[in-house]
Length: 571
Image 1 (cartoon, rainbow, N blue to C red):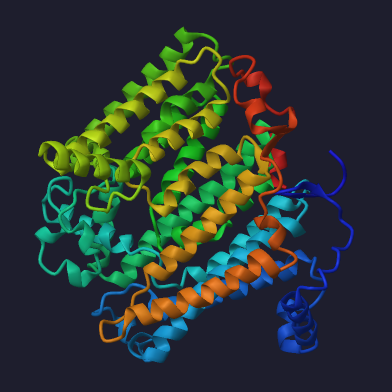
Image 2: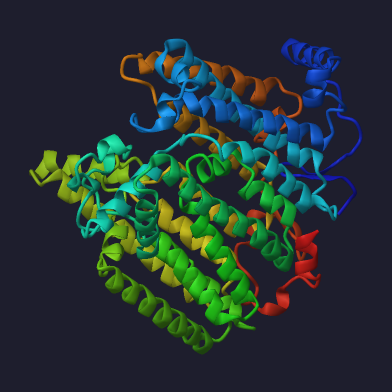
């Protein structure tokens, strides 16, 4: 590979100084002039001073963005009205006045976009082939993530649903049969009314954790947020440990994979301020894949089973990653042997755990209908609604029943696709094919939440690095999901016109986004669709996506990178 920094869209690029911005971009010239002027002051020099190409400058910008998000969350984040922090003198003006609400909303969206710029600039400024690249990504994670630990929940208030479901289980009810509305005061505790009568979509292990948190904190929202945020941090730590190890073993780019999967704004906001359980599931899956690769089958199955017991969707990954324990996947007999071992052990643990917890197998059936209370906005969901309404119009059939049938057919087709992948004679890298399988399952779902993409990204990124239109599409998707959810999920008091606040926030976000995508000379080139999609691996170099779609032979452990993966991942 020629010398130069690795850049996700264009691959290796020259390390020479960047060309001057086009003369016609007056906004760009004005921004650069303002940057030079501000670098003359002591206070602002720390943030923007020094050469634009310094990674430390980019990390400081990300820290500023995280601080803006932190302060903005105090005014526009989700918190029950009875919580002590909601009436704190420092927070109250941000939550109860028009100026406070608008200021908080602007801080959130500008902070999110500044974090987006910092994320994009970081991969331009850090040579991902250098020995210290992974360490640099970890430093950025600490700098950007630490302020977010002090945020009030933003983007989503599912953390309060976790608490409410723990309370349901603690009261002796089955969360797979009883919604959170079964208990008095549930709405005042912050749970979204959307889930009032919906069964829990989580596994028995996570319900046990939620019950423990509820009991240990006495239902305190502040302590509950901290407890679930600690679990999220544990998941992020697992990701930061095992993503580089797997990427190095498969001949991918460890630092690039950490940058893509952990440092993107969607991951940071969903994992830390929102305190979702997704990073715990992802971290356990990746740890299981690593130990399977090391042929430690028992540890691998236990870890992936724990991921399933947090979020049942992880069961899609188990039959793929357990094949990493095989030296050669050509033998169907050996595949069946691994599936029998993993399936019987995982099934026994999950059934026993459900019975011990008193919830039986409800988690399995609930997982199949997870999100039923949400508007079916995914492609399959919209298709089901359309066919249902058409059937009702033409034949008088019940529209909802027809829509449910469409959803069931989509699930069956995704299961058939998974079986076909697992039984292919020339099975590719099991982790990559687990990414294909999980992608199919997500696309076949009637509901797709913004953070579902975070389940899939690591499974792709530890096998290949990507550039071109595919990376541009990922960047645009992450940007859109962050901004739409951030603006749409603002917590605004009922006496303040929420549409005015959201409109102002959306307008500011649109202006900044236009600057990033069109006028900023550093980031605008990452929003172009001119370059073809390619992916890279040490064994193949850069190849177009379709050139690697079908392996020449079934995956073998001998295809692992010859470098010492643990040593490379730790640098």
